[in-house]
Image (tube, rainbow, N blue to C red; front, side, top):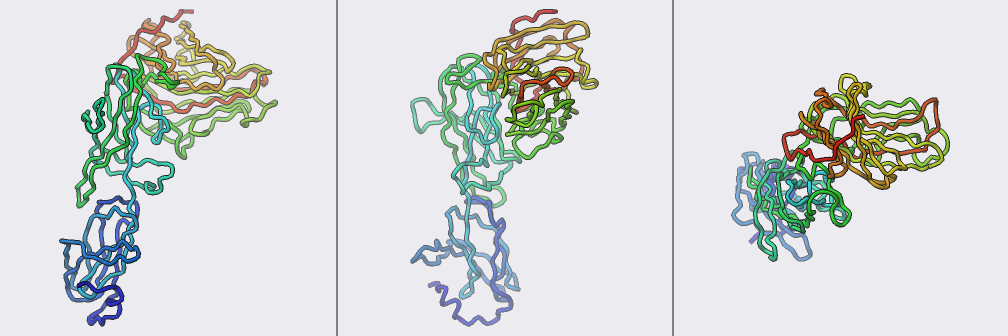
Amino acid sequence: MALNEKDWLSTPRPGVTAEASLAISPTECYVGGQAITFSGNIGVSVKRTITLQQNMMRPGDEWGDIDEFSKTTKKGGGFSFTYPAPSMFGISYRVVSDTYATPAVVFKALSQDLILWVSGEQDDNPTDIGNAVAGVPFGISVNTIPKLPRRPDTVGLKPIPGRVLTLQRRVEGTGDQWDTLGTTTCDNSGMGYFTDIVEPEAGQVVYRVREEDWNENGNQIGWFPSFPTYITIAPGGGVVDGGGSVTASQAYGWGPAKLFDFAWELGESLTSKPYRGSKLKGWWLDYTDGGGRVNKHNGGLMLDSKRVNNVGTGDFGTTKATLQNNAITHGRWEARLRTKCDENSAKDYLIRLQLVPRDNPEDESHSITIAEFTDHDEYVKFGVSKGAKKWAGSYRVGTIDGASIAYAVEVAHDHITWFAESTPIGTLTDPKAISNIPLTLRLSMVGGDNREEMNHTDFISDWQRGFSLDKGQQVTDGPPLTQL
């Protein structure tokens, strides 16, 4: 019969040469079943057989042996071994050998969890799972280390790179049947990505993702499912029922893999590299010849005519942000824009999202305007300038002030197509319009001349993304542009 704690403390222990000790690694941020290294000393110099004991530490609980566990100390009493962490909160383990025992270690395992969403618009912990379009490929992103409100037992979860993730779709009309659609693996950041998913019909579908068993290197972590995730499939392109929107990259399957994605979600500055992507380089050059400023604000890149919510004089000049060292010759660019104007007594700033030449960004005679508008208008303009030639189009988007709209352009070898959300608003196939030179993004808030006072305006781009032409559907059915 095992002795209790009082018996151990009162029993003489001849041959003790070191104080009994026990440490574990990692000491925190592990989950049940994860391999834990136990190291320490049993407190006696003779080589001995040791076992593990556990105790829930509730009133009346006693120490009990963990079945089928047995190891041997070194000659000096030291030991080191691995054993899976318990998943119960607050359970204690200790190492014992006959009448010898180490101090106890309390385990506080974290809980596994994961979330998923339609790739394209949301950050790594979205509040909206997103939507997709019938018949159009889309992606699903998975975060295996999410930040969840009111869930302290998940704070500090660590990624398990290489762990298999399985995407499943619930069989309609059932609660316990799931079709497996494919697998991927967790990356070093805790993320997993599924691509080229197609739902042929509009409606609502239910997905889940399973983190599969992980038994590498002594781990015994069992599989774990996400909550069922309901995704709305829109009929065709455009606005999804219920007010959500589908971007061009979502509707036409450009991602989820991106060349670059500036998301502004952490502690970035203007000279920080992109948040994610295959071309993790580039930075933003800010310019202002008036009272404006370029800075990060609330998860976006903001051009502000002067200090926010400060009406009155002082709004003048032009403010610009130009992407450096990440130009693309042919590809897709997409950014979500929103403006807010606190005044309406002066002239509105001209808001522009452009592609300008990498080697001469100030040469706007060889540029592509993705979107150009003023805050109090309802139309967005777009087009191409190539030397003395110009092509232009316009599209009514409705009230611009306060609206959040994703604009995009696809520049291929034989066409240029513009998008507002997922709607193709213009296509140009004239080969004379395509410069075939490296282009880079520019955001501008253009004021008047000679310190002309403008309406105070905040111009925020939530994110800026670049895509190659390798994935998804190329679009050539937008309305034609007019050559000026």
